[in-house]
Image (cartoon, rainbow, N blue to C red; front, side):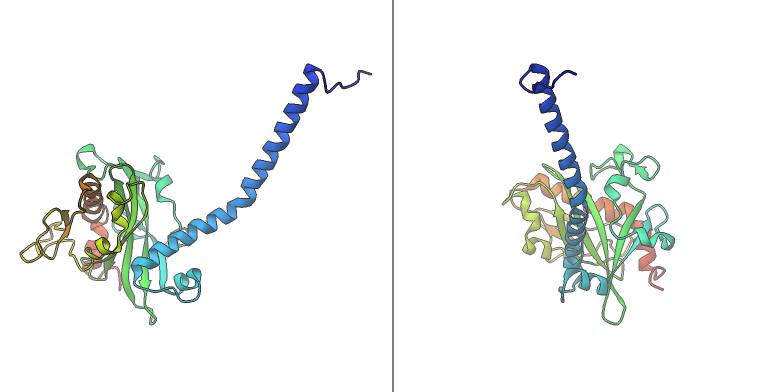
Length: 262
């Protein structure tokens, strides 16, 4: 019987190969073991962001506050109707991955793609914030679009009238701190509060621009652009206008008519 010689060339490579196989098994096992913790962290971050624009302070734990005040539903963006039979899948629905699924996405014509995202999921999660009596106080809508250096992802909260913005937050982007990164600044986000999405004629009127009107006809619709971050601001404006004025319009129209919160 041949003896195994670990000092030979074949023996050395065998030892190295065995070591690599053991390491790969350990790494794979660690990844699998950490998956639940990663999923929990992602869920916690999502809940924190949604609560931030819901108007409710965390009482107890994030999970407890979220369960007490937030209910997720899936929305069919083409019809503007909720899909109650899929409610169990709504909270944490991965609309980013579904946007890449040809069976589940909507391809945006290039001339309409002002947000620079090319396609989006046909189904989108929407979040209803409830007060202590169970009444819906706000509806929270995910939105995203191309900024300067990254795709910016956020949530915008809309009042039950379907036309008044009550808050905005961004939970993922790669914009430059101190410039485009100022989209995270609470003072700038506060400028969105109580702005209207459409004018009385039903036309999209919400806008973000330099020299926003604070006293005239545009005061109810316009937000000041970020100083020194023109391209980032343009991206956020286009994202907000596309999602509020196109993707969510069928839903918001029904919300305005009182057909959602019956």
